[in-house]
Image (cartoon, rainbow, N blue to C red; front, side):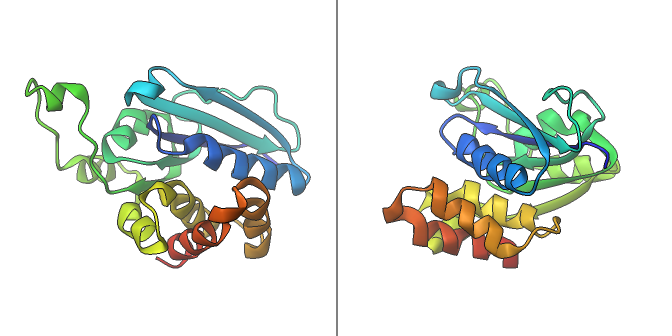
Length: 190
């Protein structure tokens, strides 16, 4: 099997690290060699966060270069645009259609570009956009966007639904398991 490369991108505090743990553990349990690398940057101040997850029979490095990502899971539209150059020609971007204003927009030095997903699609990328924030709120918490996006990613994998749920049950605090299972289902069925 060739190596499959997945990037999980967002801003600090959105739960990308939990998402990468769910995905990484699932893939290890499926018997793959898995490499995960997390880049935090200014994550605690709302800065960009990227996590690389690569899996296959034998994976040499966790790092994903431009043009190598099979999937980009983006927690926010601007982050999808920032990392789109890393996508393979036949890759897919799963993106939460939420807009989180970066500091230049907050200070008035820039304007948030609202046609980002159209531009990414025009460049030939397959974009699967969904309002993961609304789905997370429907599940019971805005903090479940990460698990909504994992549910959406699961649509593209041939790994049984129950195995994804088992990882949520293992990695999420018990009092939040049912909420996250609902969030996963909403993302999967969106």
